Amino acid sequence: MSIVKLAPSILAADFARLGEQVAEAADAGADRIHVDAMDGHFVPNLSMGAVVVESLRRVTHLPLEIHLMVSAPDLFFDELAATGSDSFLVHWEGNNNLHRTVQRIRTLGKRAGVAINPATSAAVLEEIVQDVDQVLVMTVNPGFGHQQFVRTTLPKIRRVRELIERHHPVCEVEVDGGIDATTAPLVVRAGATVLVAGSAIFGDRHGVGPAMNALRTALNTKRDTEPAEWPALQRS
Ligand code: DX5
Ligand code: ZN
Image 1 (cartoon, protein in one colour):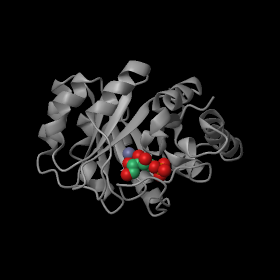
Image 2: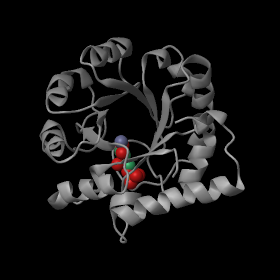
Image 3: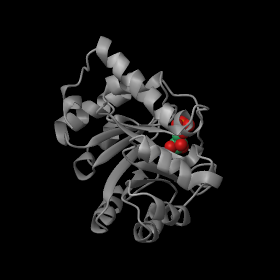
Image 4: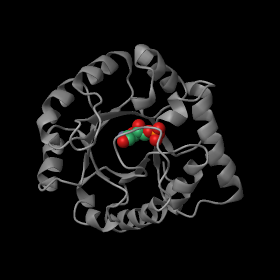
């Protein structure tokens, strides 16, 4: 069993069968469910919020992580926390008070993460990484599922991992966008420990369970032939 965590993104799920699909992901060993909240302003798309989180909370015990692609994330924490969210991922971009936002998440007793877009340097994390549980490296431009993986993010994942090893080694390195059986081994070799995947899991014609197994097989196959370069990946 791979020690890399999988976070299926329900953005690619069939919303008419959302509970069923999340149950399939849970049965297949999903570590958490990734919920993409969009406001049509921070990104050019609308998606879901507390109503969906509330419904999901009734049907799964898996941690629910909320990726807030919104201009004013602080406005949504209270309701999202009350409806059963476990962690909040907020973007570095456009937030003039990121430290305050992270402290607010902590005050609510939730896990906190900071997300960075493809054009944002790993270096911006240096003064915040000590305060978060996870960093989310966007491997596509946020806003839509099923986009092509941006390969130039690979060296950045490596730089994020190095920075985390120096400042806060328990912090997770999560990646989001275009993750499939081809790109998953690349991001893991670069230092990712948590993989968000939407279309590769919910869009696979073989079903959710087989799709998650295919991702794990890709990781394990790669690891057999190319030993992990990051010793910390061996930790649980
Ligand atoms: C994109 C979202 C992702 C999205 C990934 O802005 O943050 O979580 O669901 O979708 P795939 O895995 O299809 O690229
Ligand atoms: Zn996301």
